[in-house]
Image 1 (cartoon, each protein chain N blue to C red):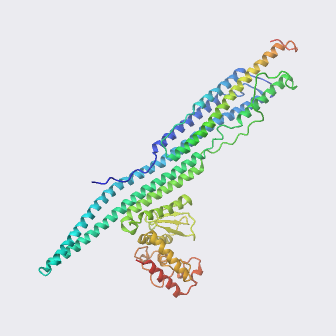
Image 2 (image 1 turned 90 degrees about the horizontal axis):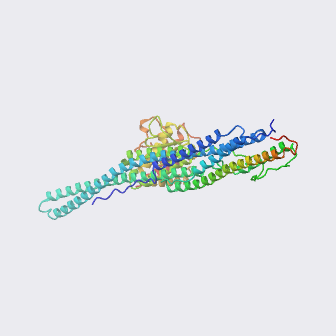
Image 3 (image 1 turned 90 degrees about the vertical axis):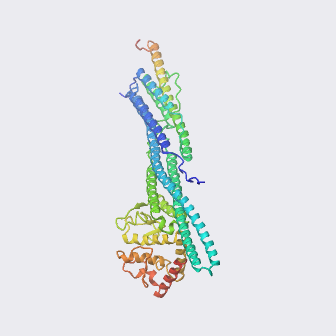
Length: 96
Length: 473
């Protein structure tokens, strides 16, 4: 049933690691190079490189934020799990 | 002291530099693809969640992978732009090398012609001095005076010939200089196309601004789902500690992935290639025909500028295509025929050696008509042709005509057209139009009957006056 809750911490953490790796790899794609092109083409290329760096940085931020958020979610679920386990006797639940 | 060769390579960049830029962006494309593939392959089917949250996580992560895939597409697109530029520039480099080699030969010819002309002038002066001396003693020995006179005449003829050869050498070298200027212009056009392609690169999809907000919204919903499960739908009794989720709202509206290979770029590249083919054809024609006509005279620079400009308008501005005919060989030979271009009367217009045709496949008669105009341009040069055509137009209009069909230059062209196939009426600089011929009397007339409404003597008067204008010294 789609409303069932099932969290596999290892999978969430693997996903977080993949996102972080992708963010680092994208970050490494920065750094512009200069070419001996016609002056007007050099100017247009540098403008494009500026735009590309802006976009790339935004993408890296998105990837990093996604990785961080997944990490926080995993931590939160663990805390919820721990809290539920501690309070299980008080609410008639089963002690793990 | 020998003067140094004055022409240089006019190109501002090299094809190698553009290929290097293309290689860099190919590497970017490959890197983007590898990152996307690695992230894609590392995704679990549900990202560690189940239920609606899992579906949402999977959908969002797929979108994230696609954002990185856009980097791959962007890199490929830029690589194509630079490689295309490199290919076009390599062709221009070949042309420049050819023109410079030819220019060096013509420069040597020019220097030799200058020396020969100076020597011939000195010989002529010497012969005239001898003639003057002999003339003083004519009463003593008339035969010496006659011999000195003959020698002075021959020296003058040799000097004139040397001057003519020098004119020819200067004209040939001037054409090389013009050809290099044309090639510099072609590179400028190429630069403009590449700049437009770079400016058009759409990076919007590389990092969608709504992505992060969408992600936050997703996890808020995922958190709600979890809480609903924990509390039986009763709301956040326990809460989720320590999670600061940015933003809110639904899944981002991700924009469609644009086509990064601009159609405009391809079209502009095709136009540029076509214009490059025109330049090659025009330069070959100038080399072949340069020495034979007034076209190679001191106004050659303007003549070339005029017809190259007309070709640029026809090919780059109006989408015309170069055409080579299968009969007569005028198109691609003495004419650069650009077809599929709108012209004022829907037929053709001759601008130097460039002829803009409206039909995609012009009739042979029409091509022959325009060929006669080519001979007229070559006979007079562009400035004088246009001036006399304008004067003829004014005279014919003043006499009640349309300014066109009965003028001398159009009578010649229509005579060729109306008698196509008759060797005596083939296009020629020496064409003679019989008295009494007018285009309007032929059965193959255009549908402009009002042109013929003037009485015959007035038409003949217009033809006579415009012929007189044409033959003005």
